[in-house]
Image (tube, rainbow, N blue to C red; front, side, top):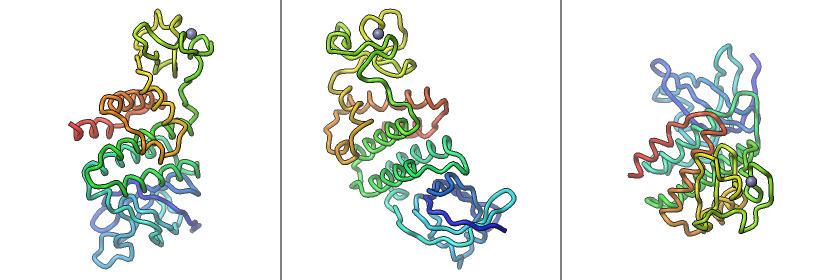
Length: 260
Ligand SMILES: [Zn+2]
């Protein structure tokens, strides 16, 4: 049986039968991996505590017919503040659902692995009840993920006619910027006439949106974002993601429910 090694993050796990555990991992070397850890629920299992959700692990696998088999697992880092905090867990579930639904086996991406690691580490170290920082981290993740997948919105020229957007062209009569999710970015005043579903974004909010796609996580976390802007940015990024990635992320709804 062929064996291989993988540095991975545990994104999902569930019980198989009495004592076995199925895990879904995202790895640097192989992308998604689905594997079974035999006897993981045994009292004295050698995997005890090693295959918990969001653990970063070094593992050795044997290729199986359907599922690969975990033969060894060593912990590199644990993010054990996540599962014990309701909100951190909700945010991390959205992140892992995005990876689980968009990434496939045997298509590794070091840059996505690194992004996943950076955001989980940040969520883990947020102060308890600091939901705002957790939420900023999620918005950062969605924007950067979209950027890696090639879906950065057009910000400096019109998504329909392509003309450069200066202040005069870019703003509506109310002074807000005009954004279209389906066209994939800003729209000039002239083109906005007959388009349905346009979003008007205040300048301050638009600046944060642009930053989410281009600035470092430390900078995003340091930004003051009003509740109103946070709601708007969440709406835009989630809708943009769902439209362009053409997938449903149930955890977005769950997160919205627990925020109320
Ligand atoms: Zn235009």
